[in-house]
Image 1 (spheres, rainbow, N blue to C red):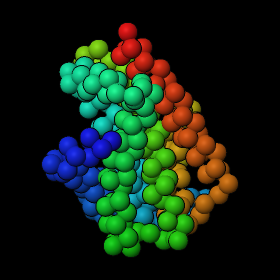
Image 2: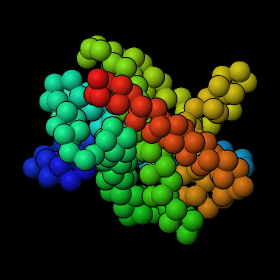
Image 3: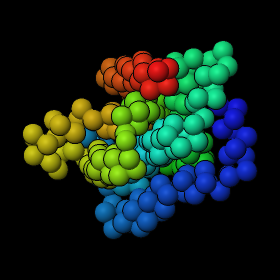
Length: 246
C-alpha cells in the first residue's frame, strides 16, 4: 500500500479524473434532468427532490468505481506483467498479505473517490440528516465488497479481453441498481433480482443515511456487503498462493 501511495502521488490526475465522472452525472442528470422531473418516491415512499434521490446513489457508484478500477485492471497488470507480487513474496510477506493489501488499497481509492463527492453534496445542500456522517463508512463498505470480488475474479483472468465480462456486469449494475429511479418501475421478477445485487445494497444504505431515514434493515444490508468482502478476501488469498507459490 505504501508502494501504491508513492506511485499515485505522481499520478494524482488519474485519481482526480476517476472521481470526477460521478460528479458529471450528478450535475447533468441529478440537477439538469432533475429540474424537469421534480420529486420521486424516496425511502418509505416519501417524495424527495430528484437530485436528492440521485446523489446518494451516485456516491455508491463513486465508491464502486474507485475500488473496481484498482482491483481489476491494475491488479492484473501487476500480476501478469509487472511481476510485482513475485518480488513481494521474496520478503516475509505472504500471499494473504498480498490479497489484503491490494483490497485495502482499492478500498482506500474508493474512499478517495467518495470524499470529494460528499463535499460537493454538502455544498449543494443535498445532505438532509446528521446520519450522513455514516455515509463515508458506508461507502467504504461498498468499496470493500467490490474490491474483494474484483481481486478474486482478476486472479482467474487470462487475457485483457476477459475484462469485457467485468464491464458487462458493472455497467448494468450502474444503470439498474436504483441509482436513477425507484425499483418500483420494474416488473416484480426484475425487482427481486436487482434487490440482491451488491450495488443496490450500497445505494439503499447511503440513500437512507443521507436522507435521514435509516431502518433496521440497513444492518443486514451492511452484513451482506461485509460477508461478500470477507469471502472475497479469503478466496483471493488462496488464489494468489496458488498462482505465485508454485
